[in-house]
Length: 349
Image (cartoon, rainbow, N blue to C red):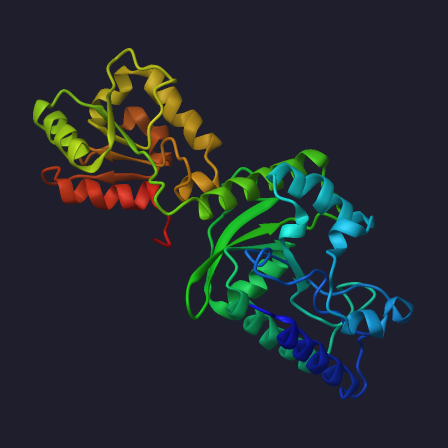
């Protein structure tokens, strides 16, 4: 698809809006910082607004259709951090992204108020851009921008303060007219409080894992492993029969459980757990090391477990921290199927 006429119309409308706004606080405008084509539209980077004063505004550049990605050709701090740290760690060339801001109009910094009319115009255009491009993943530079997009479209930000990297990465989604889209909110890489290279590395790795999942070939099913920890032979037989029908792997956990026995879903008699310190340690460690990706079903180890009994002994108090499902009636194939969908499938499939 040739996006050039559409891009030119957006630039022209933005220019006219800026010129016709009386007493504007903005020092110019900019929409796209990269080319827009079929090869790079799967990842959208969204910042807050262009920075700088009047001297930084180049009308000719603002109206041009970009042929190069600014993050690939410029060496200002944000461009360097995104190119050399975040996207290098993600294993994705930054040129394979589209970059814009959720407000198109320039101010010296994000604390300078912008006319509400200009903000509304920008947001209407951002909605249009996202609906047209249909990216697979949106990365926001700053949590505030992620919140704005979530408010504009509806959706959710999955992370809460219990997530270990909550202060630097937050995964969410927006609900467009045609499809939900994952969002990853980053602590602003060039924010005043600073972001370490280690944090930038984590951001990139997080982006890389999620993007790999979203772009996997449709025929690539995720191989699921169910672990069983019970003395109930009927349960073991039922789970194994279910696994045979659904191409699911099964491992039987005994009292010699090893941490190398990784799995996606644990079917267990919770009353046995206090007797298996290795399993308690594993569940506890897995919870602490859990990431938003794991909770949202990307190569999870233990995202949840099914309790054969519906009571939790006080002796495994800390296991309450894990997401779990209780079975108050007989374990059934449909119940297992439902829980597998919750634990190891993308919420958008």
